[in-house]
Length: 54
Image 1: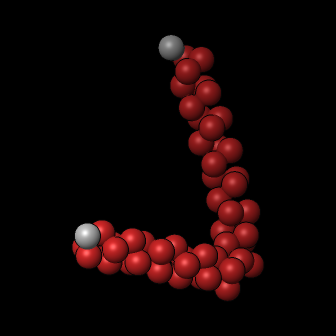
Image 2: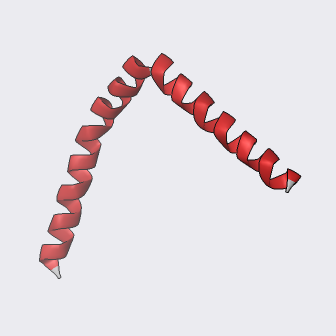
């Protein structure tokens, strides 16, 4: 019983720390998403061409 409680407390604390870090780094996170969006679209296009070639 105690181990489940400790695991739950660790899980909740990690979620809270993660949410806090996303809040602090929101601008950097948006820049990262915007920067990776072009590469993602290129990869989608390459996959589409590979599916067409089959």
